[in-house]
Length: 475
Image (cartoon, rainbow, N blue to C red; front, side):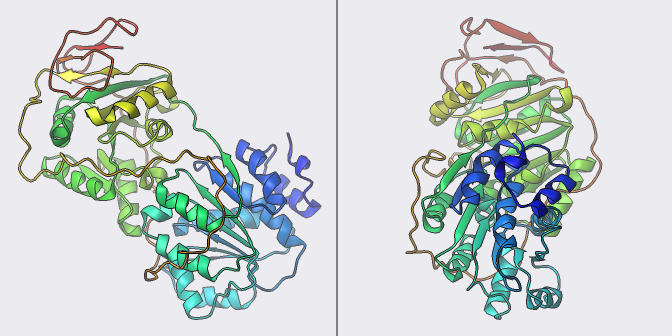
């Protein structure tokens, strides 16, 4: 399939050729035809799938034929880095159309942005806080808006922008085309889609499978001992760069602080960080100033470090897709990697889903030298399982538009957060874990307190030589 199949006008085809695009990606193949027809789109896709062009090309095609000199299309993004990336791609693809596209975000002066709006840009790529500031000051007018795009909606939710998004929606004309893109579909984003979209075309692009060089293991443990087990594992295992995932941003921040107090070079990456703090954390992790980064799923999207040796899931991810995406951060470029997941009896169903998704039974590992019967540590909150939203099948149903409840409150704020950090990557190959371990039988996720002989079910025994002892794990 080629871009000629979409019957785009010549000026846009020239932009596609100049950008070096040869054939559409899966999300472009699925999303562009209904988008070109003017339908609302609910796109479930990760970054790097080509989703920007999936909404930018239909947007340019529609706007190229209409009036000029006023705001006709608005793209809302969580960070100024993403806003700049989107704007650059729109300018590149639309270079022959004569359409004007600008960015609006906080952290810089308002005057240049106000002047560009006054000159009549047709396309605005904005972060929520600064956009609301300009709307409140009557410098940005959405009354003639034709197309609204919400990109990385789940990340905007994680950063606390959902009230701002609802205020923006309340000011947009009801008769418009809306496209919402999100990597995940938590309950709050599903509700937002119900409010913002009218009988959308649902497009879902699945994730790639984890690399074959990644070794998966489950560590059954009582919930209140997760942090203690993490410290123990880090103490007996030779690691390079370690990425630890938690379900909530508050837990990520607290865990990084606990690891620092324990003598580790650790930092966190979560939605409450300012832009400068996020950039410092990313660049420090890439450059090796931090050996451990504790992150939430959404905040970790900017991480691109080829030398991550271990991914540790302190909390089991909500979906098998989320697990696959987390684990994809290790085992890159044919390197080996280790994926460790701490599980409680409550996680049994989620573990089965993950095993089905990756097509293998994951070994259960119990450490001989860890006390699984220890009482709750003083000041620990680990016995409280972080809340997870009710599951909603991505792409199930066709949400209808409901304007009730869309006039969300909340004060406008300037954009925080950042995109990909700089710094040099370093390579530090893993040589496995340490300590003598015995595994539980491979069926069920277990409670982590009893030890048994390795089971021969599910493919027999797997033996490897970790850095400081022998590992025996059933498959």
